[in-house]
Amino acid sequence: MVRAPPAVQDQGEVIPNPAGGSKYRCTIPKADGQPCGTVISNTKGSISSHRKIHDPNSAYNREAEKFDQPIPCQQVMADGTLCGAALTSKHTMLRHYGSQHRHSGKKELLFAKYGV
Ligand SMILES: [Zn+2]
Ligand SMILES: [Zn+2]
Image (cartoon, rainbow, N blue to C red; front, side, top):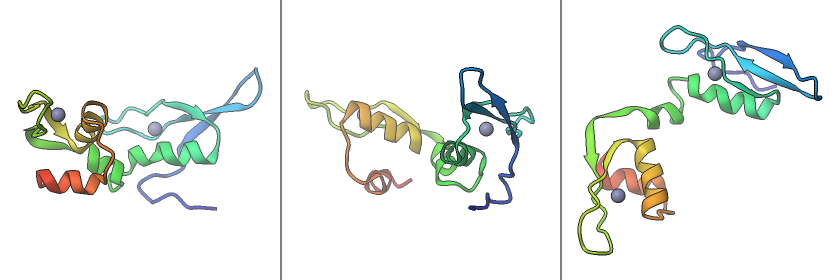
């Protein structure tokens, strides 16, 4: 069995589902002290992938961290103008590039381009 990192203890409760199977409610305290409350499938995979959002050291959280100030997107549009969309975190950047510029390369290259 894979042990969760110390910062992410096994905190949650199983919710029986009358329709069969069961759900799992995460009760890990969030940054504001309130329990998370997110309900996910009661499987090891979804529980451990959900818990990543509570691990301050996870790549997920490092990428979700806001930049000191928004970075304007430097991608040149079809009409030759700069996109200029405000990118506020690596997450926003990845989402924006994925949906607006069909970016499919390595995210590390994208981060390097912006020096983040
Ligand atoms: Zn949670
Ligand atoms: Zn853009």
